[in-house]
Length: 198
Image 1 (spheres, helix red, strand yellow):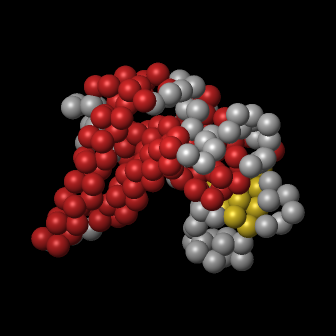
Image 2 (cartoon, one colour):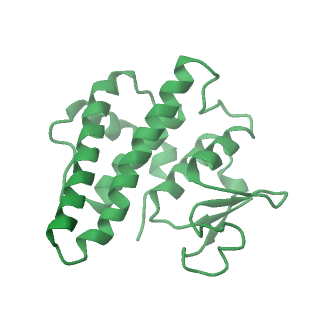
Image 3 (cartoon, helix red, strand yellow):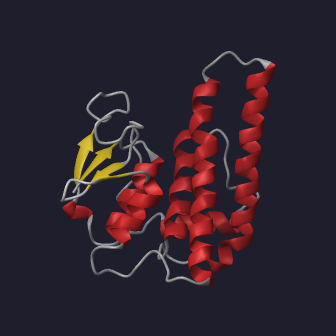
């Protein structure tokens, strides 16, 4: 397998954390490529990372689908629970964590541009989404384990991205239980071996 890869992408990190948790890390070749590189478009018309190219040449994107694909192969314990309440909880947690990323990634570009009223309003809207998501995770933290579900891995990657790109907006104040959970799980291989760079 080969993955279109960026060491700074939190979505790539989520995929690689799943690969480590599933014992598949050594089976995935990293293809370091930028999203503007024309070589990416033939395997993903959206020109996005991550994109996984399977051993039989199929292209899979983006991170939720790749993670589920990785969960379908190998013999390690599954990250996606069987249908039922636990599955919907894990998938909803993944969606909440991905929502944090969706609200923060584009904001990096906006911050670099002239700050007119419309741009400031957009930034505040995205900051509000992140704040509400963090408050919700603080409420749920007692039910989080040690990166045993896709939801927990996605949450760990989202919190790590906030540290990586938004250290000037600390998320730990007001979220002590979430901070304690993160300090424990960030030392586990799926997160410890995928720290963002760039």
